[in-house]
Every structure is written in structure tokens, then in C-alpha cells.
Image 1: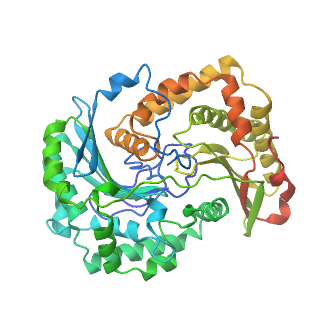
Image 2 (image 1 turned 90 degrees about the horizontal axis):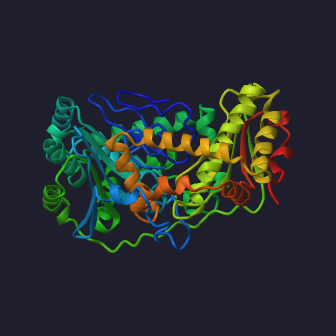
Image 3 (image 1 turned 180 degrees about the horizontal axis):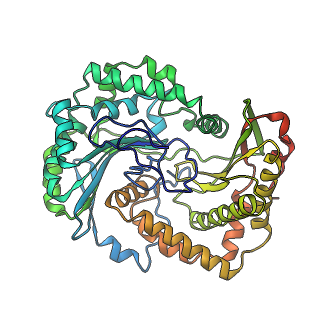
Length: 489
């Protein structure tokens, strides 16, 4: 749930997200990090943060060519570079708001277990005050204009984001760039941010959902770069100093590591002059983006945390295709089918759980999965039904009429999540960083429309297998053999 003023709640039905947090700053005290829906910049801005996807070596190859609707949409986006900094400006004529973000590549690979959390602390402390806008002045100006300033982080990238009205863009841009380039890094600001972060992470152990996510990450990402939690742990955050944040800022603020995305009714040429005057003076560096290793689970598995609670919290993930893979479009529809079916079968028909779901992430090393909470008397049946529904997608081709309805529903939801400038900035950034280029985001709708029943069955067979389950609750009341049954082959 959202916490603190300015926190934005995810839409109903949003599944749990691995490794993704976002904080939106409204006037007054900042709320603590909370899980957002992936493609909403201010219920994102990431995408990562958010949490991000590609295959091992062909990470930056374009996938499907743009088709019917893409050229018209692409004409609204202006792309240019300033001293190695790639900039995307999408013009939405008549829009009364402007949103954007400065994205930093790397995510979990920017840190080690020893300094995990430093990137999060860097952005969090930066938004407390800058050289040109001391803390009191910054808060007064943001409150006066109603401008939002925030940051987010996931396994693949982080972002400093802003959201303002067109009338207040000039002043908001000055604040945004000063915070990005000249953070004050006052010792008392850092200590306050650090204290909040430590308390939040300690409190995570009190929540079964948070504990489940942490256990799932360890199970799914063992031996992978994502095994380092970019938000850090109580121990790693506690070791950090304001000097660490200042040093990290100096090291990573290179144009080769950064992406700037802005959406609103702005003249790209005028914005370019602003970018040149601010970010154009940064060092270029020699950063070369690399795709994270793809995930592969050789066999199904299950891990338990014993906890004396009446409800079992259960989640299982499987390796999924990245955004650069042609399978991603069929996989999105297959996951949507699975989500609907487990909701009907587990909740409505059998009353086994209030909140079962299936999900698909958008990560550099991607995963999909299922989630359910059920009491000790119903957990076994709930898991059995969910695995049965995976098997049904693999065995039986969906009916053409059912597929058409599912595609229409998916497209409607996608359009609704892309209503704001902030969401569109997040989508462009995610595809530019993780999906082979921003133009691929514009081809998504056309690619979804041509998914066939055979495609859905094929990706279900290929990916929905060898799930890695984690369970929090009473292991003596759950049949462990259920979780290790192969769902394909």
C-alpha cells in the first residue's frame, strides 16, 4: 500500500513486482518507497523503474519492424544526442502537463553486496536539496507550482523524475537539472534518508508479502547479477556515508550511462538548447550497456519460510522472454489468459483465495509467474488448480473468439495505462533501455493484434515450466510434491 503524502497506489489487480520501487514527491514530507505498476512514471517512473528485459547477446537488436500504427506515432518523437546523452522528446500538442526523467543504466550491476543501496540513497538525498535550491526553498517552490519530483530504482536502471504543468515547466526544469547535476548532499539530509530506508527495510520482515518477494528474489536470482538487491539491505545501507553517495554521483553521471526522456507540448529544438546548457557539460565516459544473462531454471523447486500465520503466501516464477524477443507479445496474451483463468477457477468458482493472479515482468532478465494466498485448508487445492490451468494452456489451443476478446481486453488496459505523459515517458524509456529501441514500443499494439492460438499454446509450453516456488506459512500443511510437478514435457 502507498505510504506518506504523495504516494500513488497501483491500480486494483496489479500483481506483486520484483525489485521495483518508486517514490513520488508531493509538497510536504516524502512517502516511503512502495511497489508501483511498471509502466506508470508517477505510478512508475520506470520502469523500474522498473522494475526490464532482453536476451543475452542480442539485447539491442530491433525486434519486429514497425507496422500500421507505428509510423504516425513515431513522427511525434524527436531523438537527438547532446555530448553522448541520448534524448527523446515526445510532443503531445495541447497537453497542459510535462513529465520526464533522467534514467541511469545499470541497476543491480552498478553496485555490490557491500554498497547496495547507494544509488537509491544518492537519488533520494539529491531530491532533498541542491546547491541552487536549498531544502526550504526547494519545498516551497515545489509546493507553489504543484510540481512532483521523485526517484525510482529497479534491477536494470534508476531514474530521477519530474511532473509539472506546462506553465511551470521553465522553473521546474531549472529545479530538476540542479537537483540532478548539483545535489547538496548535506549530511543531515543523508542521515534522514538513510534512517527512513533502514526502518523501511527492517519493517519489511513484518510483512509476509515483502518477505515473500525477498525470498523469491533469492530463489530466482541465485548466481545472477540480480542476486544483489539494488535497494540494499539493512546492513549495507547502514554502512553507507554521505561521502559514498557523493562519490557514486560523480562516478556515474556520465552521458554514456544516461537517457533523458521528456513528454509534453514542448518545442524539441528549444528543449535541445536547454539540454546543451545543462547536461551538455557532463563527461561522456565509456559505458557500454550489456544485457544481463538470461535466466534458465532446469527443474521445478520450492523453498519454505515457516511462520505461524493462518494464511500461506505462495509465489512461483518461470523464466520468460525479454522485450526484444518476438515471443514477448504472445507471452503477454498467454499470461493474461492465465491471470483470468486462475481468478475464475481459484477465487470465483472454488472460493480458495481472494487474490490469485498470474503476472509477467518487464526486466532485462525476465520472469513471469503465479501468486496466491490461501489458508492452511485450501492452499494445496489452490496451487493444484493454478498448475492445472498452466497445463490447460499448454495442452489445448484457445478458441479464436476467446483470443479476440483477450486481445481486445489487453489493448484496452494498455491504452488506459498510457493516458498520462508520465506513463508515456516511462514506456519510451523502458523500450529504449531494455527493448531494443523506443520504436519497438510503438509496434507493440500491432504485434499483439496478430497473436494466434498456436502462438499462445507454443509460448505456454516453452516458458511456463520449471517454476521456482516460495512459500511463507506452515510447511506441514502444504504438500511439497505439488510444487515440483512438471507443467510441460
